[in-house]
Image (tube, rainbow, N blue to C red; front, side):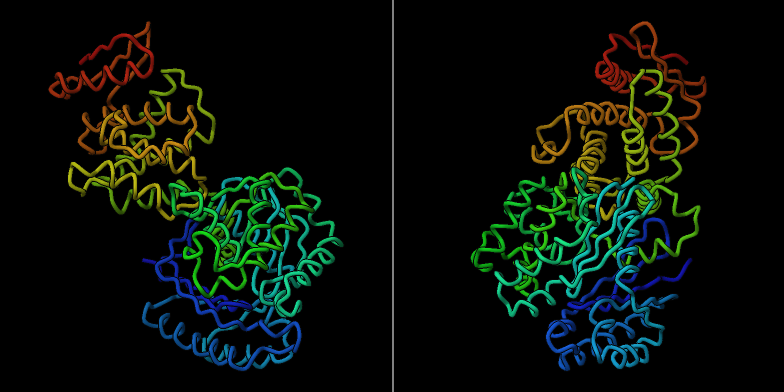
Length: 492
């Protein structure tokens, strides 16, 4: 088994350790801790890292190094960003930090930080196409991404701490600084009518506040989308209001609140200048971008969602190989039924097959509900929120049948009418398949399923003819009705 890999990110506001299970296309965090040290809070005016912040950061690094030893981390990567690279005493701090971490510290240039942020977006989204913005405590990085291609890349001294310091904690002065700084860049011009991928803790805090105020049905930050017009109004409200008086402010940690207004101000100016279609929140950034960069070319091209779904199925399903059988069998069924899937719909169906048995250990009365919650809130990447709803609903229907009484209507709001139709077809198909196989691999490749002359035919080999009966016929009939077929035939 591969040893865990860890990344320590020494940022201008926080110092964070994330330990991942292994280096893979969809790395799973097994430990995550941050300390808000505020290293960059005085760099804009004094040019130096604050002494108390240095003490706090070095103390955090001692703890993180010890934790890495306890967890038997194989490779530790340490990154330092704007505060460490810009401060006059940054070199001394980095030397002390390297001794504590017993590792080389990479001081990222602004351009490299932008590149790693973009790699984080490529790692976390399926075929991303938009402008990436990474707002830290000391700087803002902007870079364009289209699938796996990057272009441009610029850095600006507009991080929350730096902006608060340079403006002497005046929102009016900060607004002028942001407008003048961003008004001189062409980097924003490529964002017109494309998604803007927002990276960084302050922007995630803004998204969480928005999500809580709306009563959104999921708590997953990654992939949360806000239409640009709505985001603009929300940012204006946040940056002019008393932060502590905002509705649902308790959703944001007390340490993050002082920088909310500055983060909102920067995002507001980006929306005005770039005119994006929507704001998409990313939970992945520089750290995950570094891990993506370390992958070989073949692994980079793997599908992050399918990798994660396959791994979760391997950990939780009775017989993980059954998921592969389901993919091949539903491929045949959907082709026979002439269901015209898009590529994205097909990959969601394949992911659902891998995940179809993750709830089997739950009490039978709660398997549907538990599977829905596990899947809807799983640490998946490479999937949007409607896609999460698709996966969760399909497996819910696989356990509960095609009934909605026990299902929260909020989760259905995330799925389109088309996706709801496909989840019901897939759920009915999975119910039929599991009744034939009992979750065992090697059975479905021998079972035929054909659609002809308005009928759905299920063909069982002679040695499996004993599986027939009223229960199997009832499930076959329900699947046929959803497919618009009027009759069924079971042949052995």
